[in-house]
Amino acid sequence: MPLHGERDGAGPRIVLVHGFGQTGRCWGPLAPTLAAGYEVVRLDAPGHGGSGAVAADLPTTGRLLAEAGGPGVYIGYSMGGRMALHVAVHAPEAVRALVIVGGTPGIPDADARAERRAADAALAHRIRVDGVPAFVAHWLALPLFAGLPPEARFEDERRRNTAEGLATSLELAGTGSQAPLWDALGTIDVPVLWIAGADDDRYAAIARDAAAAIGANARVALVPGAGHSAHLEQPGRFAGLVLPWLADVTGTP
Image 1 (tube, rainbow, N blue to C red):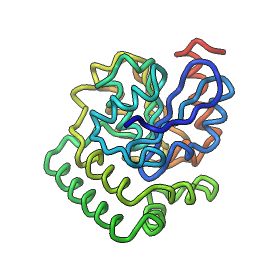
Image 2 (cartoon, rainbow, N blue to C red):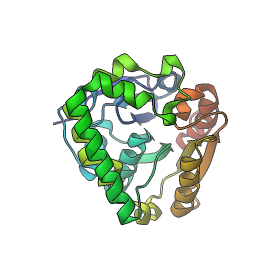
Image 3 (cartoon, one colour):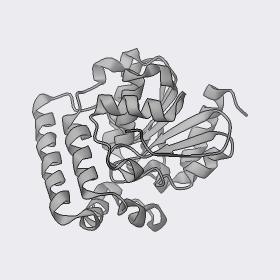
């Protein structure tokens, strides 16, 4: 089953892949800002939004995203960053450049990964039992999202998701189920911009380590005054970092 997507703008293509519990409509000001100079494809990941009936593990998700998005610059946030990495590893012909926002190549320690897998399974069960509105309230109350302004919470849009879609996504494509990609990072030979909020210590450290593993074609950018959702917490500062880099790698003014 193909993934659902929405397109805006014209120019070099940029494919946006959202975070867990969101949809392709949860990019805030970034999507229209990019559409002023690019063709922007906003995809719904498997288990989310218009792709809610699609169940796929991460390698399959990478191929599905490549088929739906086509060749372009892939920008992925959090879960979407992990998925965009799988596009780069499993369908590299589709990736012209890569932007990872608050993402991780996976958990390298087997015991820690098993612990996370158990936590993902417990959350999946909770979503099925309690329903999506209760999950959205629980999720957005986590300290990780404390920096989100009201207009960037997208609560109504998040509630469009189904309990089964979100639960299946956690079980098949959660961080606990992900085979770590650290050893594959050196095979990514396109330009990579790895972004984290300057206040998101955990993911800033991951960004530095991942960029070092990729090599000279990767750079790290930290968004001042932002936590995990840097593009939504500080959209102006985020755009100020991303737009010049995109212009350089795509050759557009």
